[in-house]
Image (cartoon, rainbow, N blue to C red; front, side):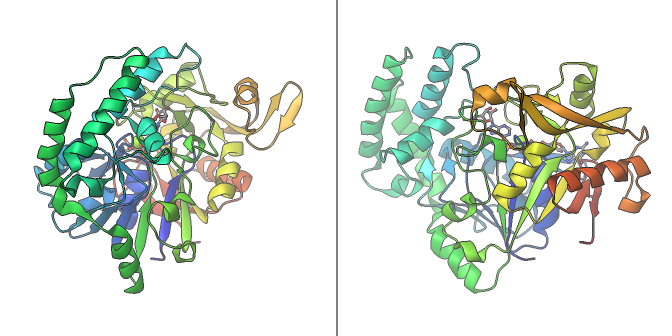
Length: 425
Ligand code: GDP
Ligand code: IMO
Ligand code: MG
């Protein structure tokens, strides 16, 4: 397989984990390049369900090498808990999971500051973060005061960490929170250092050597384009570049090494957390999508907000990421919807928009312009060839591709590996 960056094209939870799992057998190495354990990527293997937060989803394929790149923020306690979780289910990680020594570390004060900031915001201002400390950890990175995974191996690590905890405790108290127990954090991190040490390597060299050797790389994006720190619905976003450009900065792989971009996109839209959602449904159809799609956050368990497919978002994502083909998921969730709407543009204060405006206040007031298509009102979950789908389902998928200007490469009609249709491009 050509070196492939896979990204989420909406607000996350598009089914990236499942598509990564399907594509992994054609790759030699799977690489996470941004985000942290705010991600929750679900993979269904036979009757077993795995939810991965930091470890690349490729770990479920025997022998596959998996890299956590420099652009990821890593909570070592959460990482080792996840390692224990997969190992207890018979999956070995030693010698095939590699963590960048340049990846920034998430420390408990990041989570505490994340939560304290959210608490201070009024309704309408809250971001609805996962409270995993992702924003504060990236803030420390950009402010040049962060600790990196490589530092955990340093003989002076305890001292470096103590200094950081002292400063973070001052911030926490100023935010109205409580200071954390410094000795406990230092103790926990010194203890975890020993366990995590064998996984920490120079992944920049590892990846570039692997590239030279002709290995095929699969870059596993987390979150989605509309949660990107630059291109998303700011400030209701996460704190990293979730878009394809982030794959190079987050791994140390040069841009020309990326051969293709796969966009994962749901056949409708969901969002978990706060912020504008132009096609959100507050009616029984929204409830049906949530129920049929089991739309609950894989990390926090929060119910996901549901709505119609937004082709403006799709077009915007296609442009920013340079999507070569869509991996469209969850078509089966629409099986019981009689008439399906597709958003083709927005109107705000009498002005028409055919792209996503930067101003979140404008975006919040945008009214979607819809076109309608008939539903198919029959099950698609056992279909294995595109031509065997009901005509109305084929027409719907074709219309989404037409409106977004991207061809279909993969269509998913269920969580299992087998519910995946490959389309010859
Ligand atoms: P990710 O964060 O993008 O990896 O997505 P999540 O794992 O958070 O959420 C996607 C959910 O949809 C998971 O529970 C998947 O098992 C499930 N899923 C993926 N593809 C399909 C599909 O085509 N149909 C249905 N019904 N479920 C799917
Ligand atoms: P995957 O990889 C969906 C959302 C949070 C919140 C915002 C900021 O599973 O698609 P953060 O904790 O990152 O500071 O929260 O981003 N969010 C996600 N939503 N899927 C995710 O990951 C998400 N990761 C973060 O709900 O709105
Ligand atoms: Mg998810």
